[in-house]
Image (cartoon, rainbow, N blue to C red):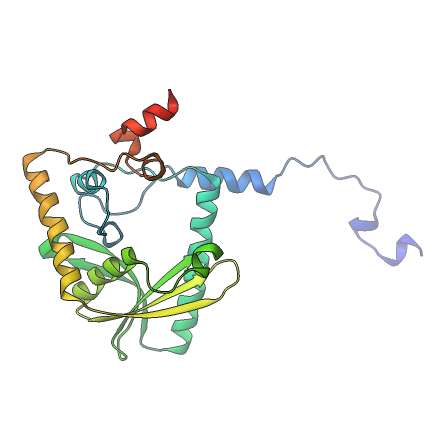
Length: 237
């Protein structure tokens, strides 16, 4: 078959310059650059941080307004981006299905200095909506909502005065979804209030509480550069 049957550069004789563009390198550079900045409000309590086994020192630094640092790991950044893509897709679908759906709702409960964003609210149906993308291994053993997430959505429920949440988990490997309904539990809210009360006492006395000091947890902490926990010093020596 004659080359003339398919005009264009694919069958042409012109040589292209040597490839210098590498998509993987460009993405990795972009993710590393994004890791240097953190957009969350400083000096407040974030709902995702108010959980049963929170590192008290991390919470102390967060409330003090210490500048956090994101992980620069390419893998972590890819998962973070993938989670955003999944969230954006589901939120767009909900906006199309439900005219009253509002995505990325600002959450503010000033009496306890709690600030954040809920993934969405269905106003007429009276539901808080929270989306969680997780890996296949975690999804396979998911029989109830993760306890940390239950505490997180309680902050949303109180701040938005909507006493129930639909918590949707999405398997980022397969797209499968699993839904749990969470009703407001006064006992859980009391625990959150107590976590804040104890931390506020530490802030008042300006005495950082004991931290977790476990390499697995501290390695991914956004304050490890400031805290310099012993467990990480031992692994570096």
